[in-house]
Image (cartoon, rainbow, N blue to C red; front, side):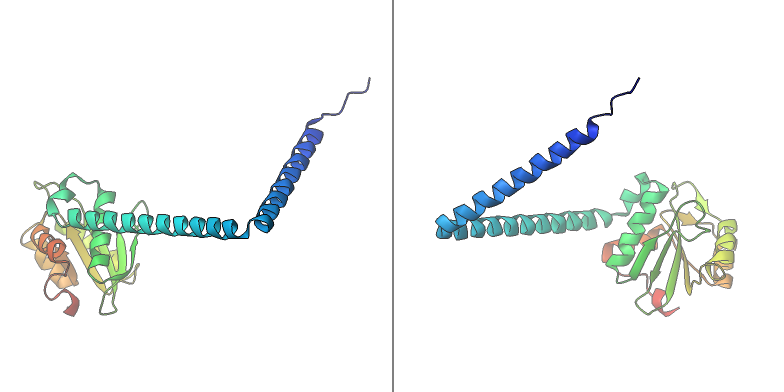
Length: 207
């Protein structure tokens, strides 16, 4: 017994054909309208262009306003206390961009090997940053500094290696180790001033 062939292809073919006829009919109607009413056609084209331009301007202004509002919120260090680690990385990346750093890239995540954010400093050096979003009761210790020092230059090619935290660093050994290894430490106080002024801590770009 022979089975009938499915009719899906025929139905689709009819649909495409009818759609083509509809488009053709619409084109004919538009051409006929333009020929019969040239001035009205010009007016409608003008209205369409003006409306599109106005919408683009409004969208651009809205984006600019949202960026300005975001930048104003970012000025307060307290906003970082409720952030996740990933949000803190994005926040610091925006701060770098607002401070004149170029090619800012958030690279944090599994397998980043310590490089959460990379950028090019205004003085041309490659910047590699590890971001530590901490509670105020925890401190970044010497072990984290030592691990970052082992990858910043050798793995990521960092010329300016930086650990940034919204908290504090362990006093004594951690700070001394960072100085010995050439790691810049930016704690809550320096970060707060940086975010407010949009300028890096004094001496950061001359080290």
